[in-house]
Length: 176
Image (cartoon, rainbow, N blue to C red; front, side, top):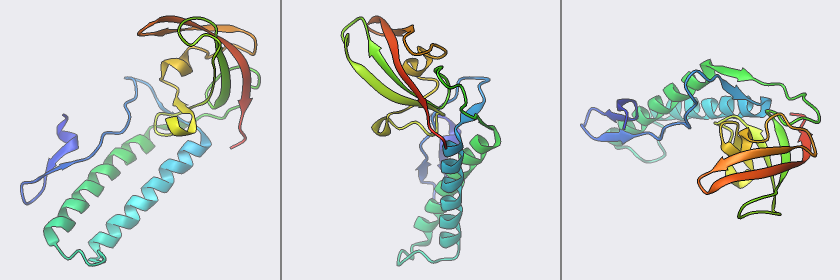
């Protein structure tokens, strides 16, 4: 694990801060307008929490060592977030009818184990991805496969179990 994610505090205990989802080398941090808002909201919450802990308003947790650990973890999270924000490129979603960044796509699997199944997902930035909300990072194979086709066109996706053929059933863009 990278030293950036394991830091020793004054007490010698290790603080583990989860890494942000990786971006491929040389790839800008593409985000939707919604994704940028989420990152800015996260930053504001972390800054507010740091101020609360720094002011000693820790709601009964008067342990200075624990406060120091929490502040160190917050500092690490903020550094990672600031790095992401410094490379943000907001993508305006205006490719109506064609699959691209920000699109909500419905695909039907035409071959393989899941033949006949339909999936609906929105192509978003890596920090905005959330499988429980069907928001898929633009770096994911399912998002890359249909990038560019229009409704009715086919795309191919390589999976560990082999190649799948997908058909683009619907493309829609949210107005964020």
